[in-house]
Image 1 (spheres, rainbow over the protein chains, first blue to last red):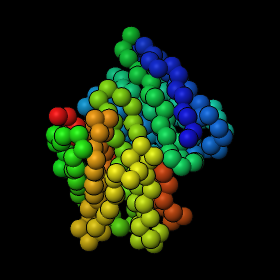
Image 2: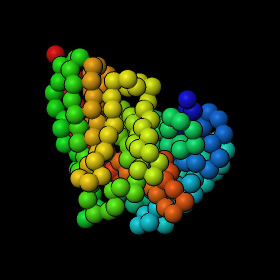
Image 3: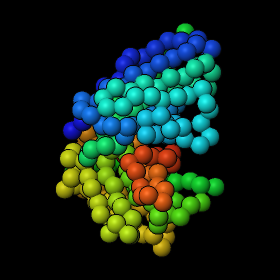
Image 4: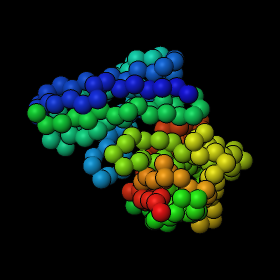
Length: 107
Length: 125
């Protein structure tokens, strides 16, 4: 199975900060990567697919980049509603796998 | 509204069985591949299983951790997805999410663009 490693596991940031989360795959997955946002007690929300394509309705402050094994999710200016846990997910190889999550907390 | 609504969760003893259901509305259910994803309390996300659409022969695929113990099925006439779970273990306790794969004219992709609210399965004696 492809192992997805996210870093950091948690980050403290303030409103307006730029936040970058990294996701590393244990083998080449091309651009077959998605990002999700999950708030406590809620279902995950789909943010980005194909590493850098923004899902319809997602604010443009979210962006994704990378290919191969190294990927990043960037929030350009953190908003109060962005405090949540973020997960990456590879869609290249069966079985699909998720990263362990990165919690974005209020500083 | 476009939504997925799960039901059927609850408390079951180890070794028991449970059938989860997911009602879809607001989109053409039959076009999409559908999946189940679970999340144990305080833990991350784990993909459980998938069923393709009719053009792709309703092929099913399962995670190794549940293969042989679960069956994913669908009823396109009722816009419904199901997860039959047998021989349940304590480690199967989780919130189970019904999810829709993102599809376009080229096909369906293992990205989950719609999630239900989830249904909680507790496995305990």
